[in-house]
Length: 68
Image (cartoon, rainbow, N blue to C red; front, top):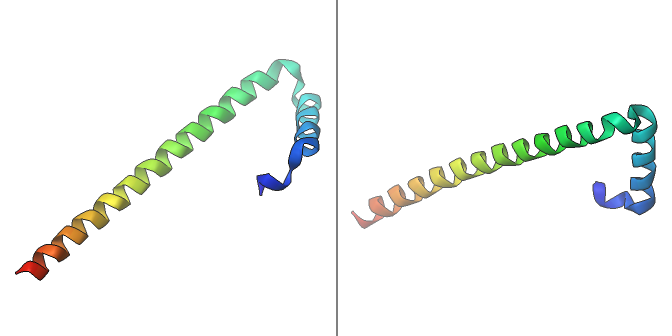
């Protein structure tokens, strides 16, 4: 989705954000957005790791059952 925006689109979005929020609020909003993205990535990584561990445990159980 974001790959279709391009440089002119990003410039337009930045100019609109500057007009709407003003130059004083823009760094604060950017910081909050960055923190949100980091937290989302950390949460999705945690969920992915939990799923991998669960599959690994199930796979080990299946291998042990086959060996018996």
